[in-house]
Image 1 (tube, rainbow, N blue to C red):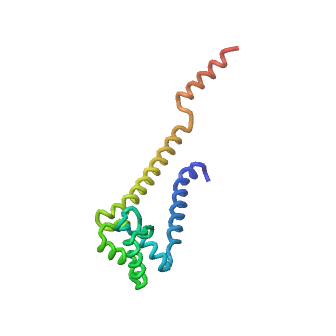
Image 2 (cartoon, one colour; image 1 turned 90 degrees about the horizontal axis):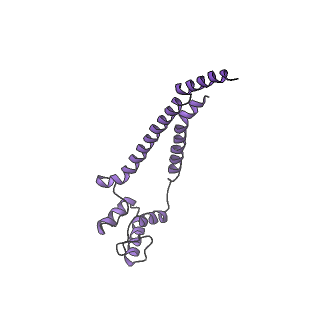
Image 3 (spheres, rainbow, N blue to C red; image 1 turned 60 degrees about the horizontal axis):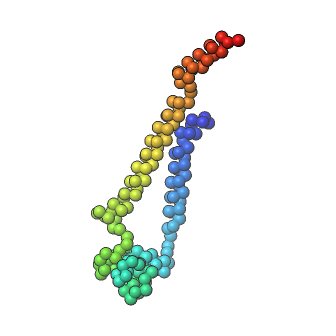
Length: 159
């Protein structure tokens, strides 16, 4: 393989390795969760209605304890995580720490993805520009050649 081929494809290969690694790690987090894991995850995604600075999972306020009991009861019944969160949000508006995936709240999910894609595109553009500049400046310029030729001419004149 030539050096220019490696230089051209190295950023793409690096990006592919990163994407595959992220996908593998993300896919490995699936699977079935225990009820305790579900209760903890739901409680961690709801803000305590009394203290406002802690999640239901971390707070020891009476309202947080009641909500943890409510979450455990609903999970025990087989209610989905989204339905449990929706029930809590309807009783205590503004306590959800998970942004909605529709409407204006969808921007919280979309903006980081768009920013990542734009940043990746900018990197590709920059790498291509740098490689073109490096290729165009790889050899001596005409001024350099003329300077060397003049120096060689004068070197032969002197004893």
